[in-house]
Length: 167
Image (tube, rainbow, N blue to C red; front, side):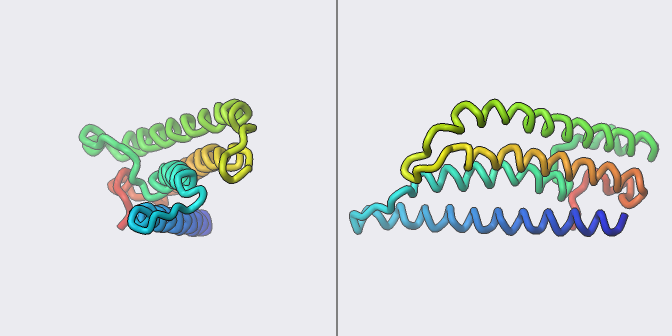
């Protein structure tokens, strides 16, 4: 169980670092766009890079939120329940999150197959190369949900910390 928790934490940290890099790219692009006006020079493909960075950051952010236990939870009723029911609702909630992410993975294949063949201008690459981040991130959401379920069933998570983010 400890190895699973360590692996999950390292994977989440890796994804967070990727998101930091994407956010830095976004900041560089914003600064470039602001400086473009006074110098009357444009950088080729900047608008498309912003869209790619936003899509990837948004998709990966959902998976990291699951890992860090920062997903949406209404704990008013759950906190007053006995430990067994609290654990059951926690697992049910994570199972629903995993199911929804799994459904998005399944549905994204048709979504990528359609417009994914279109060429993304100005890079000259198929849009599927960019869109593939959505099923990857949703697959990570499923993985993190299942890992949290296993850790909860294994007793690695205290019931009073089930819905709260780690510090």
